[in-house]
Length: 145
Image (cartoon, rainbow, N blue to C red; front, side, top):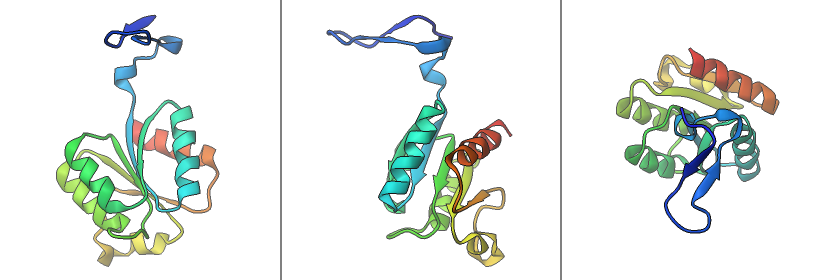
């Protein structure tokens, strides 16, 4: 575990102060796919404030392309999105990394719960509307499982 100061290359901003002895290399990586821009910003801010590294996209196809190139600990996705819906994204994510945690954030929980949807069986669902602290708590709970 790192503590104190970490070097980041050369130049005037090559050092980054690490707060509370946290290890920047151990941040939980979350891939967020949410088509509502305001919601995406709120979710990203809340999760980053809770200490997570968040990469966000406004539609499933772009999120999937990023997922093919980088590992993530959690896929947090809306269900109804343009180009590629959250269920298809979750299925593809589970094929790439069967150990990745998946959580749907949706106002259409019945769609995700429908056996015909082919959503990954161990995916969790958080129904909209929800409070940001509830999201953070559920994400923490899922990641700890």
